[in-house]
Length: 349
Length: 57
Image (cartoon, rainbow over all chains, first blue to last red; front, side):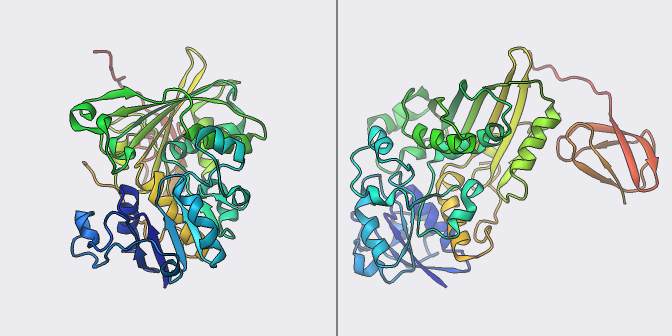
């Protein structure tokens, strides 16, 4: 059994990761921390885990972390970079769900976030999107899991950037995202009267996830790629729908587009094509993936303006966060990649 | 079990005891298909005529 620690386990991401790991047949959760809730049973903060686990939150202590084989960091950016050097030097494997090690360039990180105090680890970290970096993840000791919006956009665009059928200088990504993505801490704009019934554009230019989106798509294209990206807060608790507006560089058929996705994601266990000709469920919708690690991908060709629309839907807490963290653990330890994640979504939810 | 390919999405379709003119549904893309030719275990399909859906309200 792999002994796992969760640092920063009181947030929604930490709770979702714990929920998954508690039923992972190869993992024992040894240690979970929360500064604010140290000493309290986990179920005081994650009520759905009542009588599922007797774990209690502890204070963060590096020597206690050394009782683990692998540590998941579910802390905000800046907090990870303070802990990673010590954890790695103790021989632990680190799967970081924060943004601190997603970007390869220090300058880029500092442009979007803050000063980086452990830049020497940026090159060593592997971007933990299994569909793109599986081989590197197998050998990595520091895995940086992608952002939720980033995952939904990269997974949708990657096949077409690789295929070279879209104009990579004119890509627009528009995402709709639920409220739990704002985290378990609250502020005035997450207050229920402000958040309920909302359709609110936010960080309409320069969203932080843009940096990793352009980094990863640029690696596929072999050249710099710029994306216009605007997210919207909508009245859902969970889920993301991303719509990517791209422009075709040549005529393509629906079959060709479908085959491009099929080929790129051949044998991927958590990618599903959803593009039906009829029926109620023709294109991706967060409602169909809530509670699962799936990413549904659909598309439509708009010949009127030569546009290829790509749609992706994910559960932001699972495929957008805790799911790839567990996939990465499975890949790193040589377990079957779907272990602990073989569940469909809840429907309706 | 006879096999064919959906002309719409390229998915492989398995069909038991196919009969020409029979209408089947592609599980991957949902399009209705008409069995146009049966040759042993190989089946050819054409997209069946269907009424369009009007979303224009």
